[in-house]
Length: 325
Image (cartoon, rainbow, N blue to C red; front, side, top):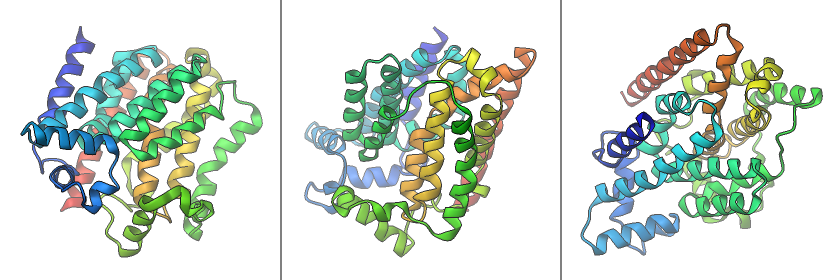
């Protein structure tokens, strides 16, 4: 009952937020009222265009759009958390501390795509590949970046071998070197694949018109730093934690992919790098839950993770205020 009540409360908060009170709402409002032949509409996902035009025809405003996205994304997310976590309510509190605000309250198209990604991951782990593929495809129509979720079909949940652990340990330092050297992995992606949107991101990068929170160095971003600490901590205790969370190996592999995206795509576009990192890093909510088993007694672990979640929430809020000011 607590889980359901929290879900309903989350829907109401995300659905009835005012334009301007959080980032991206002004952009969504402009896109919502844009004409169908405008440039922004042409590069926007079809579900957003369909919902906007339908609501226009019924004389509904932007709040109705926010509410519809919340009604779609949050139940999907809660379902995925319930299926993937051994302590769903604990995982939900970790999710609320960061990704609820980032996705469901701010980046609502990403919210649906990432929720469907978690469901796709669950079905992948259950060997129900058709359902998993369907979730990724549907997510693509909510946010084009969701297509990268197909990478879950080339990794597995088998226990990590020593060489895999070594590779995962090396991803972040190598990625930092690539970032410093200006390496852009996207230069190997044919323009036909990226299409108009990839070119738009390149143009935004060149003109320096990316979002207020984009392009911030990772060492100044509390969310990135906490994910790095979590990643290395879970790698160090991976054998112990795998006994408590059998999905830990694939979660760590997905986190590795998240860091590859963050460090190798930043020279193409900070927006692309951040969006893809956040898309994959969503599995960190389950790693935070698993991390409690590294402590004795378990209650101490829960207390530590609750404190970490609170600090992430407060630092993230302060970080945004400082950047905006």
